Image (cartoon, rainbow, N blue to C red; front, top):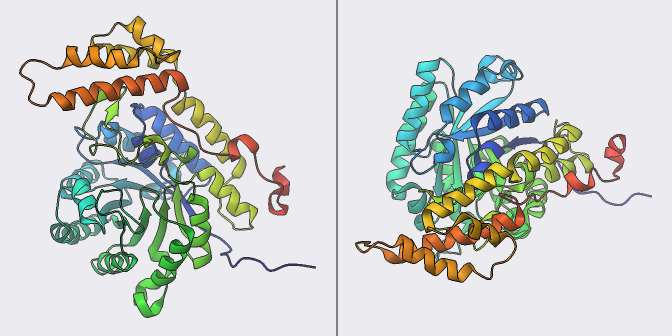
Length: 431
């Protein structure tokens, strides 16, 4: 006797964007060598699409100051270079080029090297307030720029991904609720302007399964989208701030979406505005109370879920779980040298002795007193924005206290790296 089964695709395409979106949220700089090794491991596990860096200005995004080094190392890699599309393989390299200046940097890189990214990405938000924070431009001006940039990318042999964000809601105060139909129209505009596919994005975890299914049934409806209703033009990008990420991906699968992206350990989100407890540009104040709990759907858990349901992802599950476990050690655990750097950076900012700061790992009894002392030290007589300085030193101390207690730069929100594959008939060979 058999029951009814879900309507699901036989196979899907899963891209991993840990090296870019995943790492940008972590308040620590990781060297290019470590980033490239992670990208290599993911390619060897079977991933055909990787987003690895951002050509944005390093003043505001110092996590990507090594953009050219990362790409050079990857394209010249002895381990995976031959597997990249630029070198005749199948794996495509994706990068972010949020505006025309960053796209120009990517084009100059390719012209100088003779190789470069296969895909570039630009982003528009249906909530104009959110869009202005991310791009500094009005929607009207951004559409004009996108049309130019798409043509420039195609002329250089690169494909363009157009991201539509804030589909299911916005993190900006006063504009939290958004209209699904706006995102449908934005998707049409992007594709009509020449985008090769759309990243349908829930960048802050606002979606729920019902509205996800509703939206994607519109996106894949020929009566609404015409020729753009083909699933090949649409990719799902979901964060799981409220724990609904996998449920949202299941809803997207049932609606007919076959392209997804995710991150190892469920890390990722809004770019960090601190680096090792020192302040950087980023994109301003954090949208969420707990910045590190707004990551993407976990690559490990999503791939395991799909394979358990009989959906072919083309990914080696055991290799992926091993990558997930090593990611915790290599990227999240704070080693003694990193701990010392955190303490010294906060000492330089606050004037508080390293020995006292180190005690925040055991108790926070002195935290409020330290905040007052730090403000007195950091706020100079001619300071024009004393409240900003007060807020910054307070945040640095709170972050340090959290790091010393957790002993990690972020959370590993992947169940599968702990429990392994489930006892599904489709995964019996892995048990």
